[in-house]
Image (cartoon, rainbow, N blue to C red; front, side):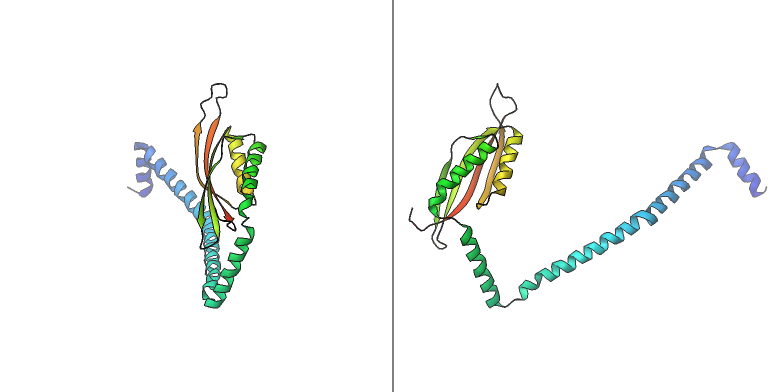
Length: 190
């Protein structure tokens, strides 16, 4: 029995087996071409980018090789820059007015602002923890948070929580409870 007659006999007995083998070979060939032509070059590009980013990161750590005097001078300059943007304690009312203004521009109303000052005497600063809540739509709340983050004042969002507002006439309302921290220079004792 020759090889041709063997293949012909197999073909007559079970045609699905040779078709399945041929289909698997075609799928395998297609995956190989995908790997070689598309995925491998993209992988090489990504690997090069990764290596370049590693090199840039290492170059960024050159600052660690500066002398202690240079580091001290740089830190002193950074501290002076920070203190230059920290307002006087008398600006607290301006901050609260700005919060009301930003809430109004977002279509919200501030319920009530409570604040607790904490003195940081070693740095000559006052830390104020501000607590308040707002009610409005999710979009208005999102707009307010965006405006708050874009403000020039030094304001840190410490905690926020959203809950469904209990209003029958406005079913899509949510309440935002916020706790912010801000800093002022403490030229005057509390």
